[in-house]
Length: 381
Image: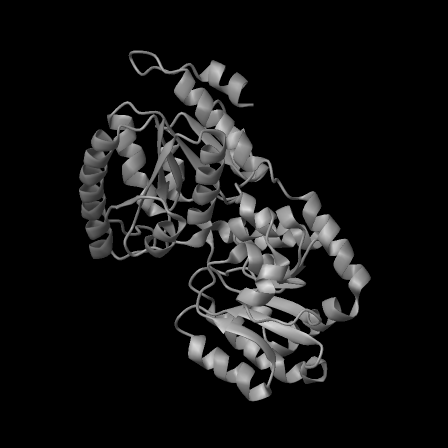
């Protein structure tokens, strides 16, 4: 069997695709998995490290752009469609999966033109425009949140949860101490703002350091900054003489999660899925410009059930962040309760459900590439 997984741009769209690839290869070791993405996205450096082949296609955003940029994005889409069509003709996949992001549009459309079955994954509670459009030409839609089901054709949509990589569930804490040069007896705070970092989180964390000086002998930090703020953040930790590691990007995320006592991060769907699946106490700072404000909605839901602490980006500053870090450090019972509640929201079986649906789609293929939706839903759950 051959599978194409198309998507990326950010970790939130890439890592569910990687989780899917891992489960496909675990279940069907002889399968060939090929990724399609953008040379500008995170997938360009992550996928080769993971050992998968990747085909690059041009892609540009559309929403919120000027008229000139929208025209250019349409022309780029047509170029990407032509290239995707050629790639799919060569690869001859049994199924194409859109894991999200603008780069997934052209391959999914090309799959439809070639009568190759396709599915899309929607990570957010408020779907983006691309997936809403693609929902009319794919065979199945796998969603993370019940709230997003109403945006899609009811006969195609499946509530599966967001795929989490198996290795994230089994990160090696002992290996993490060596990889990140951390001490075993210190409380560890893991901070990251997504694959490209988040300046507001980086600045607030730097400011918070001065309010946590009395904990300096008991606490250490693992901080992914992104490229832009790396030097600035590294100098701040060094000037206050804190223990820990500052790095532009972390490839060993399973180990980073494993070593963390608490997580400080944005509230993207993939991050929340990972935090809940492994049961971590977290301080969530939603990205304020997310479509439909979905990050704040999702973080607020977890906070209302004592599964996370939320700080709105507009309310974020070093003092507030330090108060919440201190609270989680000083109150282990509260921290443990938060972990248990977060784990209750986890869906570690999401990736298995999606592969079940994929298998059903490819199994019900006829000579005319026709698929029976009612049978797919029965087989896919």
